Picture (tube, rainbow, N blue to C red):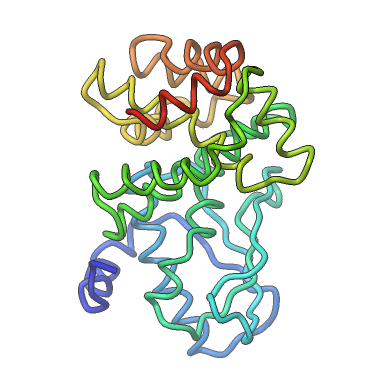
Length: 265
């Protein structure tokens, strides 16, 4: 990790007071456990909000302490209903801070809540968004920069490219992947959609998808109630229908053509 522990703690001390998040433990924990979790989440949420923008509603974390988790985080998922909305995780707050911050799952789950619930029929896009933005949150932590994150995505997509060497439409391929339990290729396929969107947003407007997502939190997040509203709002912030046109491209173009484009751009 590029940012040292001391710098992370300093950043935490400066920014923690402004963060709108809450920790709810599923069981009583001692003061040391609670403090370690707070340092970790202060740092992680600060990075997430720098990338995704500060969410208009309180970001709730429902934590269950599991001392045997060597990677720091185990089962993790999100809930969207208002009364229970938040990130649910099994955690081991006693592993090193570097270990906790190097785990991609918490940034993934936090990123889900940057957008409204998209509906089960758009799961590939929802998971793709969280997969794509998770690494940008880690960029906010200093784990990547704008060059190394591109290298990471290219390598990540190359690892599943074999599944997309077909003339079937990209969307039909990615939906078949989840139906047959090939989740890694499914998640990365969804991330390709946002990778391409980001490419065209930057090429045409000189900004990144993360800039648009950050602005979205304060302008449209509380008003949007579904997938179509979300897409139209993001395109409105961009100033042209890049997400809508790219989605049509992914629905009608062969998987082979799209993976070739992704790996060469």
